[in-house]
Image (tube, rainbow over all chains, first blue to last red; front, side, top):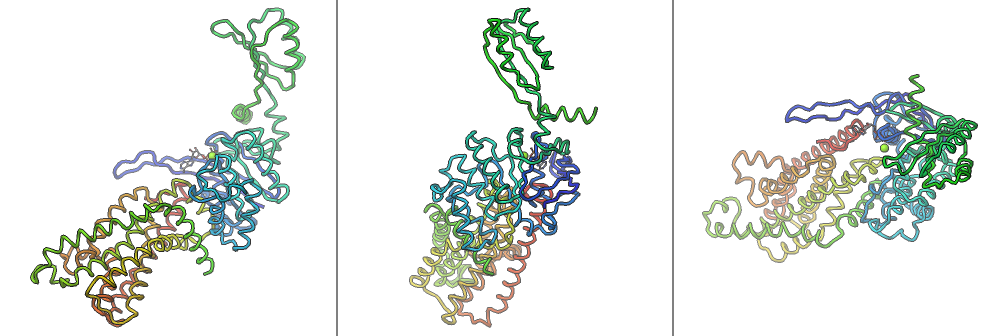
Length: 329
Length: 271
Ligand SMILES: Nc1ncnc2c1ncn2[C@@H]1O[C@H](COP(=O)(O)OP(=O)(O)O)[C@@H](O)[C@H]1O
Ligand SMILES: [Mg+2]
């Protein structure tokens, strides 16, 4: 069990630097945060940019020290027994850095494996296995500089698993990846938790990613925990409202009346926007239910051409605003 | 101990592939000291022709080549480490340094592993020099067969420790260019590569004390130019050991401080 207990982190960042005098500004990146990661469970940490997700991960992986509160990993303190904790955790960040580009994939893994002091035979076996699991067997002996973005990311994952960590931290792991690669990565993360019994914490700003993978979700806003729930309950309570945008050339009064009647039965809200050149009309419908087909049927009954249709899933930004309002109100 | 050896080997392999990927790198390592050696030799030559030139008070004319060769040889070793340590800054920028700090690897083992491996990369240069010294140059005076391996041992050990110190410094400093400049020409001048520190004015002698190369070079020259016995070098050797110990402690301190700084501020730039 990894236990984060009342942890806060304040950064002192330089604001102005004169020749002899520097002024500092304090940034509260994480405030009084508590959560736990059990082996075999995937925890999602959601939040917008600057919410404190990366800071949290760095504290859990001993790269940063909290200003207050404590982090214990299987009973070891992340500050006092940091060497021990380092061997139990690992971190994978999105992006293409953090690898030696002139080295091959295998050489990279071998180097980092040696830093963990893993026995030669074990290491060799593990590298072969990891390369296979992330699908880099064929590129194992190619220098990383010739890898594609997705391949580099997969090598990162293999690197993050080189010490067979009990707890794995993934910082926006699918950022900038193509959809199929991201999908593959998600299913791999799932196996890591469910089959290899690793405790996983992943940060993201995509709700669907978190919804698909996580057993529990924490939402951070400006360093503070604003919600802790299961993904199902989260989507049911916070992320339930879809918005449907429909563009039509015109909206006759009769059609609008009918539409309003239909939406009332579903308790949906409607907003109508006219484009500046008056050539099209945007109908925005906010609803918690699946009514796209009924709305389209109605429009086609009235011989209206649909120019464009967009279904928007709820945004994290909206949910956070909503939650913040609810806390205040 | 086995852990350290394995780390040294891993570091060696990685550095070899990562840094010494092209022949150009080896070439640039060699070319500056060689040019330096040649220009110094020819600029001293006119002065050293007669017996009452100032330099002959400290270096006998027939020893000049050997004097400069030992100087540039030791300088080459120390200098190759400055170059490789300078590359450390890139690791910070590319994020690999953070990944290294994520591991429980012994921090000192890391910097010495790195310095050890950059040194091995330039060992062939060393042998080129040694062969030149042995076969071309006159004036070698040694106490016995042990003087050569012992001189080599002293040079190697002090260079590794020196390199570890540089690695520690360069790892965490943004303005590595500043150190690079200090370690280039001043090290060449004040360590007595071209002119013996005995010939320095007093302020320069003081500066010489700050460069570990001064102590190393002094012993090496005693060993191969003055046929010094072990007893004779013992005092200088003791001083060198103390200097190296101090250097190890400073390196350990800098690394510790820098890692702490990183844990507090999230930034790896210490100064
Ligand atoms: N090294 C640092 N020094 C000063 N401030 C920082 C540092 N790293 C992050 N911050 C600030 O701390 C806050 C949280 O950042 P971060 O943890 O990176 O958020 P996230 O990963 O959720 O985007 C932000 O306001 C950010 O600007
Ligand atoms: Mg982040």
